[in-house]
Image (cartoon, rainbow, N blue to C red; front, side, top):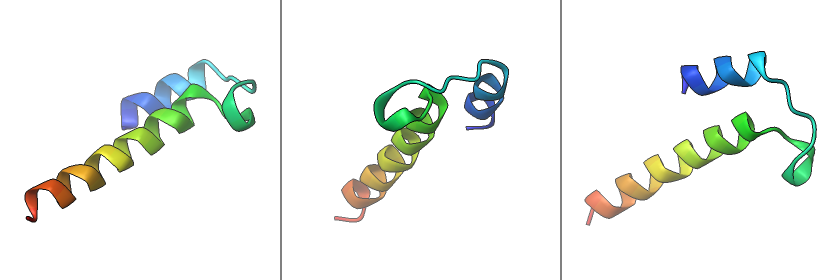
Length: 43
């Protein structure tokens, strides 16, 4: 996640889905993937 944020700071993007950059989408994807793994392994 740190690498994603660093790349996002270097390559600042203001256009995209919801006017957020790719780094915000990547971080949200990491959190969602982590939550999905927790749910999948708790069964």
